[in-house]
Length: 446
Image (cartoon, rainbow, N blue to C red; front, side):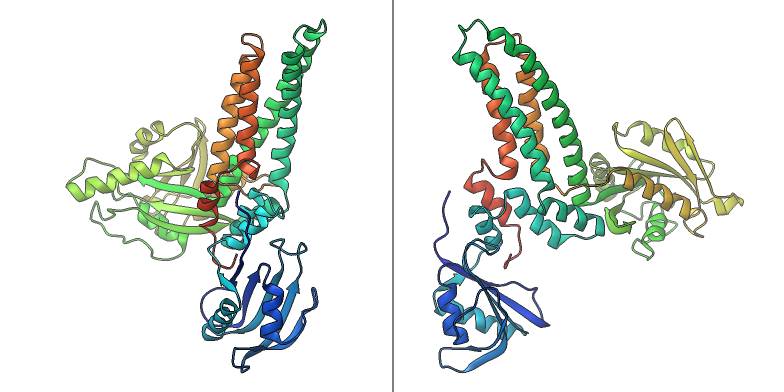
């Protein structure tokens, strides 16, 4: 793993104009840059009002300078922060001045990458920094903060320690195979495998929920043409986002609209009506609708009042584990009343997307389903974490099945693979390619 040796600089605040802008410098030259730009000796962790000076000793701006000496900084290196007025011209002048004094422009995510490389954060915590910045709902922000505080990492480490104890027992059986007490380790192995399995199942479930919460709940609206799918999207979104007409097949592409319910983000996807396509364009829209269904967390199957049987085929074709709601729309046409019922495990709601009657029943049901995935103490996670855990689970299952049917050497190899997969989550085992892919998604200045 490469160690950072140069000094980097970047604007740490968003693009555009604002009352305050922050330029961040990290590396061995940060102190010298502070002395040259501020004409003072920086005092650790003290905000000082100074003039920022250019090469001609002219003032670029006046603002606050803060210096954090290594290792007590975000990156673990000497860090300088210049708080100036939020003009892009001023901030660029400060960056250019720092570059002439020995810094170079930072890559996206390079400050967080250095914090990871210097042991200030593990990889999960570094990713949580980006997730917290990108949070689009209160629930996402809370979950990201928990990961940043180490909740996810601690649970991974607890499972790693159980795997380490398993490896110790297995390695002992290999090293002392002629010892008369070898058989005594089998009950301990079975006990540790049971404990590891329980820990793993709970962690995988929580990580899947965390990944779902991080990306937002994906809800897909499907049904036959002209049943009111687009009207339902508009009603839930509170704006005319989708075009609504009496012409079947108006919706040709997938239209997505984010909605926040009780602090949890829900992305609604309006799709083309499911039927035999009338032309190539509509056929492509229907193909995209089915593709959207394949990755849905929640499906709203819409049908017209009195023609609910048209939704049965869609409901029957949904994969197991996908939450679903059957919506009977247009109750205003026959003076029906809003209602909620449940049959065969499917919640059914009668409403009118046009008048709004019954919409509160649907919102309440959506809140219930969305909240069911967010238990107290949820942490943010990513798809790569889920994939790493699934690999670990496969090796753990292989090791457990080999406990009485294979050699200790094969069992030990599976357990090493489990530990390595878990280490990929926190960065204990990670390649430069993986780090490059992760940190390149961060914003510059963080």
